[in-house]
Length: 70
Image (cartoon, rainbow, N blue to C red; front, side, top):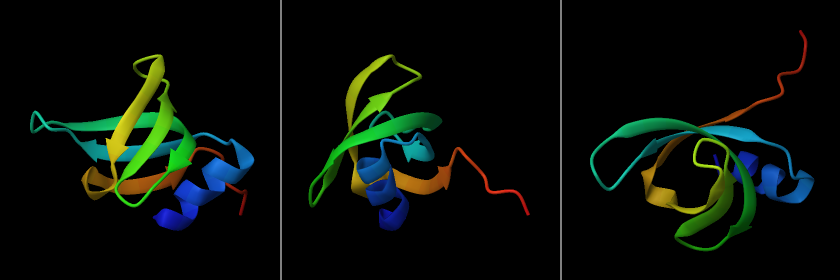
């Protein structure tokens, strides 16, 4: 998971995450990572059209938006 987050940070590529929000809801978001620290990810969220903070512990899955053929 952290590998894909770091890849998005370095390449500025979009990724998809499954996120468990503070209000107990599961959401799928497409994001572009801006910064990562020990507990949070700062990213542009395409669903909300704004920069958001995501708790690392609440990110349940990460997937590349661009899949390699094969």
